[in-house]
Image 1 (spheres, rainbow, N blue to C red):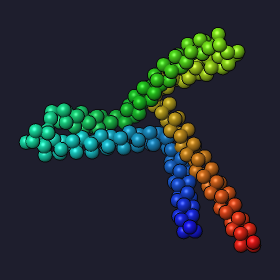
Image 2 (spheres, one colour):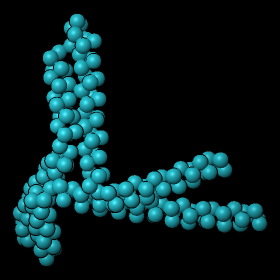
Image 3 (tube, rainbow, N blue to C red):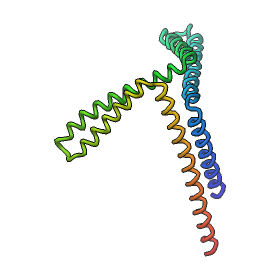
Image 4 (spheres, helix red, strand yellow):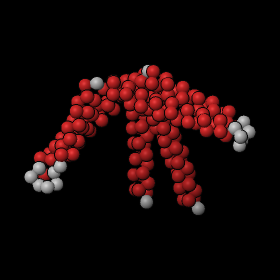
Length: 188
């Protein structure tokens, strides 16, 4: 039991430290992190594309090979090349899609909050304001997609650092509590 608890504790500390380090990387180098995510995804697309081609070639003489597999493989490889050549543009494009989703969600929620006016007191006003802010945030992301992506990565980095610190605090608290309970048990 004690060995298991020690393994869990060391795992918790390792997770917390990795979370803090990853968060610091994201917070101090958000541009690099955003582009790195695009590169990693491009590598994933390239690997899947290559494996799809290998599968197609190995199955070509069998009836299980189809033209859809080779089409998908080529498409994945083309996307991988585009992602590798234009990482900032890809990060910006993803931000634009996210921004458009926020705008659409904000508009739909504005209409829903206005509809709530008949059923509730003044809560619909808060919902309307929140929906408007959501839509405005989406427009800001669409207007400045790469800047928004970098800001998001920065915010994500801060969250990872905070999560890691909280994990360490919880670990220390639990460890102290566990030691005090062990002392009480040994006294009885």
